Length: 494
Image: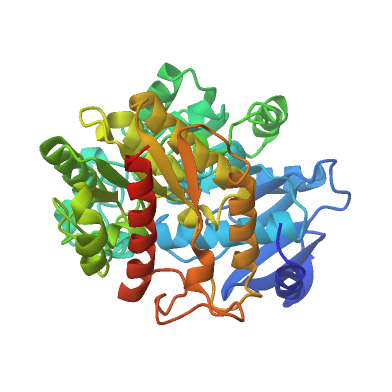
């Protein structure tokens, strides 16, 4: 729940902009975090406030959009530019989602609509947020960007678009882009786990986004996962024109399957790999996420540590044996944690579901540490509720216990976010930690050092925290590591 100040700020965002006509409906144009947004209101909103999100090409062949507006759906769009579903755009999508569900009170689950490259936006956001999706409608969607715009396997080769794509994703070079293992066709398990229904419309003679290497592959794989998918073929049809002149089959599919995903578990507890392409931005030396996973796993296998540190970029900052990453907390690690034979398994950008995947896929299969230290959840804040984030942290703890029942678990409460005590993120973090305080297990201890990172007036202590009032500087790592040392000494003697 956002603070009253946070809600007021968001309310102001909603009420900026202009109102105009869109095919007889009221259209609102405004900004969310500086990005142009559109909301079109139905004349009579349907119970539950459902909505469809046109991810790209707003107002192009809008037959389904108009049909759903008539049925009481809202229609929305966020103009993130030709960014090919890149991670930064997905963060902007999550801000927009929060704006629409908090201020406009729209349904927590949305129909995602991906035309052509818009398919990348729809599937990439759904992969990170499967619990927030009612259905996916793909229209001649790109499901593997090495086919289009790169041109592999018969797809359209567009050199300018291809260079734009791998620049937006942050790939260090073309080879990294071609090796990227997180295409929509590769990451369907979370969607199937959430029971998201999928419908595609394709032209069988599409020369831009070939059906055989995009929709057909996705359809086959989704069916093997027991997912619901329907594909409407247009015999002899090319990439254009999109959609159906009569959208009735699309409307019927959506209404028939509106409740399929209603019982989806929180995204925070559905194990997934991290599709972000940080490479150089996180001190990874141009190497991808899976290489970081293997580095951490290898260190555990080789060193058989008594203590493992599990987390995201804040934990990664300790550095330590077996890790080739930037380490602003290196001195604190050496002073307080090295004596325990600790191994740092923190990876920048990870959310609870990514750490959960790592624990379930080999991170603790060989070495069984005496203590596992967990700090995770801050990267979930833009997308997930405090309750869901706490449940994700608890799921990681339970997964560690399942892998190594004798391992004691020391959960570090999520660090404060934001420079000022009035920052809405402070409220979110407080609610996460309050929920965690109710988590009781004989093998779990909660460590909360918030007071040591803040000044007496509640402002972030920027001598200890970095300028973003989120990450730590050396003195902050000293505080955390000293607190960990004290707890680890106690736990070791029990």
